[in-house]
Amino acid sequence: MNEYRALLYEGETGKKFARFYQLLCAANEKFNLTAITGREECDVKHFLDSLAGERFFPQGAQCAEVGSGGGFPSVPLMIVRPDLRFDLFESSEKKCNFLREVAAELGLPARVHALRAEDAGKGEFRARFDVCCARAVARMNTLAEYCVPLVRTGGRFIAYKGRAEEELAEAENAFRTLGVRLVGAHSFLLSEEAGIRTVCVLEKYKDTPAAYPRGRGKERSRPL
Image (cartoon, rainbow, N blue to C red):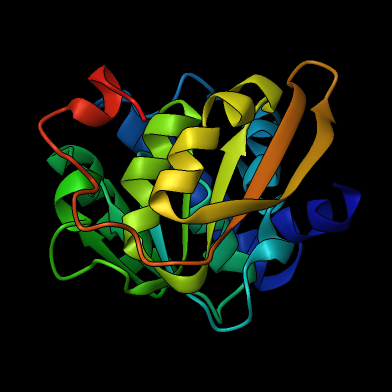
C-alpha cells in the first residue's frame, strides 16, 4: 500500500484527503459515520483500504456504490482518479447530505441518491454502470443481489471484504443466478491491527433475470 500513502499527504490529493478527514470528523460529532476517528487509523482503515481496489476500476468508468455511508471506497477513489464518475446509493438522508457536502467541497464527480439498492436495481439505474462496488454492507450472497442488477453486461462487481473464502463459496449460487463470475480475489495485509483484506472482482457475463433484486428484504432474509 506504500504506493498510495504519499497521495494522502502530498499535493492536491493530500489537501483533499485532509479536508475529507475534517468533514468526516465534524459530521461524526452529529451522527455516527465511523468508529475510527484518529487520522492515522482513518488513513489506513478507510483511505488506504479504499484505494486498494483502485487498479480494478477501468479508465473513465461510470460507477455505482451501494450503501455509501461515509463515502468508502468512492470518495478516496474519486480523489485519486478524477476520470471515475460515481452515483452513490444510500438510504439514510443524513448520510446523503454528508456525501453531497463532501462532493461539493472537494469538487468530486458524484451524484447522491437517497435510495435503497434494491429499488435502484429495478428502476432507471438497472444495468447502467460499468462498475458497482460496495464495502462493509452485507454478506456476499446478499450483496451480489443488491449490486449486480446495476451493472451492465460486460461490467464489474467489486466487493471489499475481509477474509473472503467462506463468503465466496456461500455465494456461488447467487453468482450463477445473477450472471457474474469471479475473476479475482486479491488479498493483502492492510496492517497488523486491521488484518487481511480482500478485493473481490466479478465480471457480469449475462443479463440478470428480471426477478432480481427481489426486494422487501428477501435479499437478507432469504439469500440466494
